[in-house]
Length: 130
Image (cartoon, rainbow, N blue to C red; front, side, top):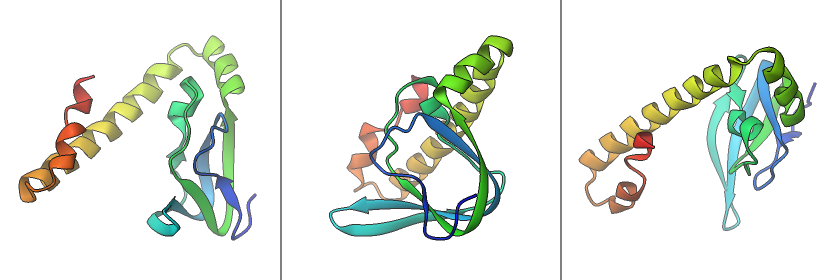
């Protein structure tokens, strides 16, 4: 369990793990140019870090505990062993990742069509076509 104020995972680090929140409250935080940006609050049944199970992946955010939180931690090494026993597991992870990617791209398209001056979005639209 993690206590309020603790960091479950830190921005700019590859801890080689994924996290499934069982209880509590956390906040996703981005530190940029000395500013703290609170991205969102998350609680039970949220999953973070699935990409890091399949490949080295530096986390672009920190996950900070707001209220005592319990979570399951799955390391990259443990995931590799589990995949040996359950070979369909990576497909389930990829499906979850693809769904989130499609939702994000739809939001970017909406943002761009409502704010065409956001030319910066054009460079990342189409990522779902990978």
